[in-house]
Image 1 (cartoon, helix red, strand yellow):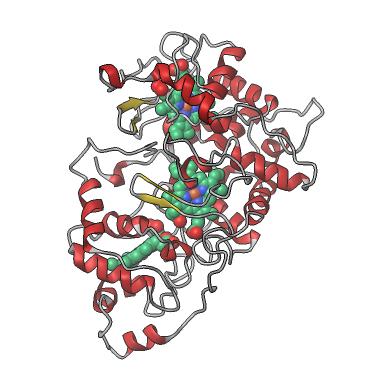
Image 2 (cartoon, rainbow, N blue to C red; image 1 turned 90 degrees about the horizontal axis):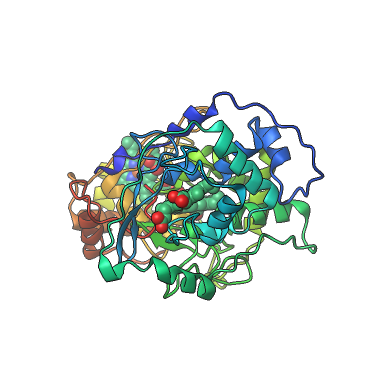
Length: 448
Ligand code: HEC
Ligand code: HEC
Ligand code: HEC
């Protein structure tokens, strides 16, 4: 299964037909009720919530009907499960769910027939959704989505490894299931951003490191690990806190909103699993919601880099490359294979090719994302707004582990960037695990 094969970016557009506006009738709390923002975005309240939650990314396959299920996901150390059919088909989907049963499975992971879901379904985040949004989501799934008769695939978890029963204990140990509570010391827009990020947007499912029980180490800003960056499927979902070099410390709120809306900004481009998030979810959000998420993220303090020296640009490597001085290891590989797009200054060509100089992901302590994109390229961000960013080519066949390690070590320590070296062994591990000819090695919460 090739990494290039996955794209449900367009799948959700099939759902777009026939969705009218919904009038806002109940008194609403702007932080936790998405009705007004749905109206601003021009889609129904329920579809808007489905976008916020990115249900389509997991509950669809690239070839299949939207929301009819079938995507294979890994449960760490246990085996594989398949995301289920959540179209309103009474036999194979969720057509027989009452609102109360739906609300229960969305918040606690207990399905209508009593079986417990594995947290590959991010119910610990959805538990924070407001009742208004949950009801709108239910109405959307029941009334606006066409039923698809498609049986769920059986899980691939054998015998004693099947620990669904234990998920009840897991929930008690790890997961509060209370809806989001407004913090009255903060602005409305901060609260709106916190609600979106922690709740329906489930950003922490990828961006927060996990503990021994595979639970997210923190579910809100009270924990220092919250959104501090985490590895997943051989991508590194980078730090979204105020870390000055590898986090969002040097970004303005407007940079964050632009990235979520268009998939790129002056610092970098969305790639890896973040492409699915932009394509299916954040690009559909209203301006107010994007600005609110940016405000909330920008309020998270620096953690790992609280004392780090901020990035300062340097011209040394650009001058060396221009003089064809290849004394620095990796510089010649960079010059020959990378510099026609990312250029000798590391500055790229905005918006078509991202800069590598000063780009937070380049300075991440964990280089997995860099290795993965250099080996395999990336899916394209598809925003339908202005020119799309070009594709990053894949160098799996062209470059050896050592060449990729050297080029990335050079990139991580040029033009002012500072980060640890990349080893050939690290490249070898990701090359093997992401080999397109393999289909059996999917990792935690495989999204795509
Ligand atoms: C990160 C991937 C992921 C996302 C995002 C996701 N789900 Fe799921 N969902 C799953 C998986 C996997 C299962 C099956 C879990 C299991 O079998 O233990 C599931 C199960 C469910 C079920 C239980 C259905 C049944 O068969 O009884 C419902 C309902 C559901 N999801 C609704 C949603 C909705 C609505 C959204 C969007 C707000 C959503 N999911 C987003 C992965 C996801
Ligand atoms: C499916 C996993 C996944 C989810 C869910 C996810 N992200 Fe990401 N995100 C990533 C990965 C991987 C990267 C690193 C690659 C890149 O920069 O695009 C990333 C990068 C980012 C970046 C750029 C950081 C930088 O330093 O360049 C921002 C901003 C971001 N995510 C915000 C969010 C927000 C906000 C949410 C929730 C609405 C979210 N992400 C949900 C996987 C995810
Ligand atoms: C044909 C143009 C092209 C060449 C050649 C190229 N890249 Fe890229 N690269 C891109 C584009 C376009 C993106 C952003 C789009 C994407 O994520 O697919 C990107 C993204 C990246 C990123 C992620 C940064 C971010 O914020 O998106 C890294 C790291 C990277 N390239 C490294 C390299 C290395 C190392 C080489 C040489 C071995 C290289 N690139 C060669 C076009 C290119």
